[in-house]
Length: 177
Image (cartoon, rainbow, N blue to C red; front, side, top):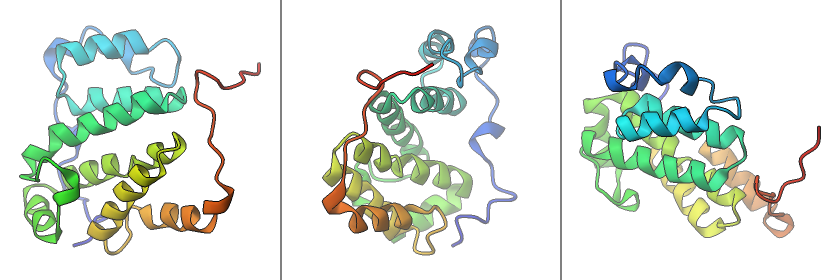
């Protein structure tokens, strides 16, 4: 199974946006701007399982260097998509058999799920090395061809484990004009 072979696959953004979100979505789409949080939270309150809304929130928090919040959204993405793919509730229990079934249900959604799990990178950024490493190891185990690039993150972690520095979060980062 090639996780890059999704040309004809159904992707999360192919799903129609929940109609109740439409009034707030134009402002929420500005997730690269600092002003999008409130509309995104309103959209999430209106449609908590909408994948486009969850991606918008994830990107907003990531671009704002709010990694804890981004990691929470990545977890929510896993919670929402996992049942649709018939995956175990606990990501650490997923094996190749589960992935084969999930791929049959939708390779695009499987990629979406695994990329959310690759959010273990955020755990690394937050100094939670064991958690982040475990999440990335699971992605590498399931993505044997390394099509999602998680192996590189583990290689960098292994190569620099003695030199790891904790990156500042948005709350304590120096802001320069």
